[in-house]
Image 1 (tube, protein in one colour):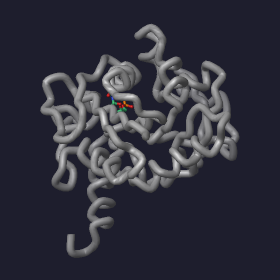
Image 2: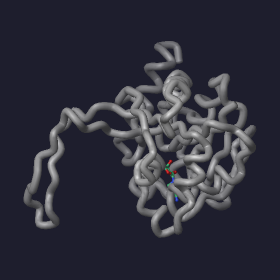
Image 3: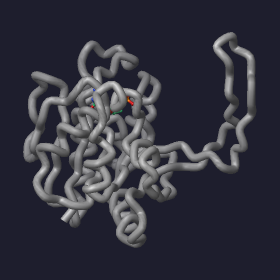
Length: 222
Ligand code: C5P
């Protein structure tokens, strides 16, 4: 059986709500609760561990641990508190539009390739992406046909994730996702086509969009 880790310990400063992002109310539930509820729907997952901000109340029905100083440190702490589950699904609480269907597809992709260490949700980039120097001048236009915007959920073989996270805190702090640590170690990471709807809540605008999308999912009668 699989285990799911939700990282929810970020401060969410860019939302300007004066409290941790995971606890902000979104369509009637704390932000983190949407991810917990989506993961509960997945039959292959029998344990959910959540890395929460220190002193935050623990959500019901999950194992809660204090998060670390960086995202990957929070993943490492959550993994240390998890039982035997394998594969390990990692998800950011900042993506409340998660669906159980996407989690199942990510796990299935990993299980379908014996040589893969991880399978990650991602969507092809639609904007043109340029590299810009610190003075504000463009130095390069990247080939968009090769670019994907990476999301969570990300599913890992447990041993590969444990090895990838076995790094000094300063190096973990530079990682923006866990699959990047696997790639660094020469591991094989598969991409699973996701929807742009699985958006990341970073600024107040994202919170409004997420609220509208959740209202649409519930239908006209709410
Ligand atoms: O830093 P960023 O906004 O990309 O955070 C992505 C996810 O990692 C969020 O769900 C956030 O709560 C979590 N996080 C964490 N511990 C940290 C920093 C971020 O659990 N120290």
